[in-house]
Length: 470
Image 1 (cartoon, rainbow, N blue to C red):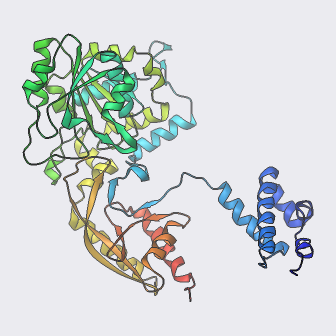
Image 2 (image 1 turned 90 degrees about the horizontal axis):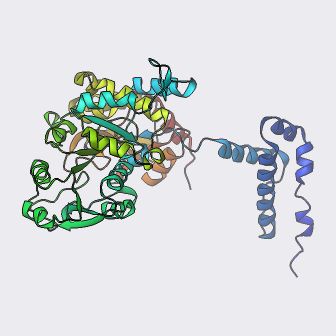
Image 3 (image 1 turned 135 degrees about the vertical axis):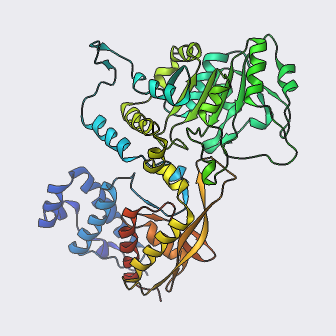
């Protein structure tokens, strides 16, 4: 007959006994008692299951304290953490999108640590508007009559449609019924706003007459959606914003464009795909334009609305505006970012997104070689390193046809597999995220910062110390 597990189970110490141990007393002085007890019980329950399964777990107090220490460290660590972006995707949605410029980060710290005039007019000594901190900058930079900011561009579109077209029809090209990340679909947002979708044209071709034939007594708005994250090529045609504005004026209808990414500078001189700028859209006479603050603009997550003063006033008066408003930290970051655009050369240098997108490949090659030389001095015997040409991506649903020639540090492990190495780098105190191509792990220098280089060396040094599986 199998031996009863009773004697073995009695070897498991009780929680009470462990907490009276000097090591337990010390841990309780450093961490919350409920957390320590919860984790201890989880550990002891696992030991119980191991014994019942015929395994021999470590039950000595030092082993238990070591295991508890690891669990406490994991439980008390911040979940939102800094990572090294070695993917080459500049506006990486999963890794936090755009990095803030130093002045923007400094303004966020000031707004976070001190009281501010968020909704206080310092000149008049009375309540003010939070939107006043960025409206003048936005109108100056775009040429619009007025501006408003909410928490993201999806919210901006929802708010605009709810204000201008609730219960009425919005005419939009079938080829512009886009879906972006997180299942954001134009038809569904329109439905939530209470507006009625009136799609016209076909997937690849929409003509001005399609819009004109759709206009009726129920029409409230003509909408153009910029396809930021894809392109339809070949036998295609679409109606320009200028043409829509003329049609809107003919029928007394407002015209809106959702620019999506939204750019304040033309980046095509740097070899990137030509993207319509916000000021170009404003000059067409469109009544309302919406775009993101954290994509090609390079600021914090925000939804920006610019356009005619009367239209912006209507949107601002919508009760939804309060529900979708941005907080003081976003305003601080956005204001500082917009200030940089007053000097385009400075914006290109100091706004990380713009700087990363416009860095020439030759500079990235030099950076990659410096990193290779730096790492070769560290005797990384269990991984080979090589600099290879590669292609980066803009990311963030922007400029889908633009390729960014770049250089990467290619890592080939001499022990384990490339997947083992990728998992190791991802599990470090500062995780390193790369991409695997042709059985090598690539760290693209376009998105690696100077401060990341010591982190890469420490993580690869730790890989050398990892014992090889037999």
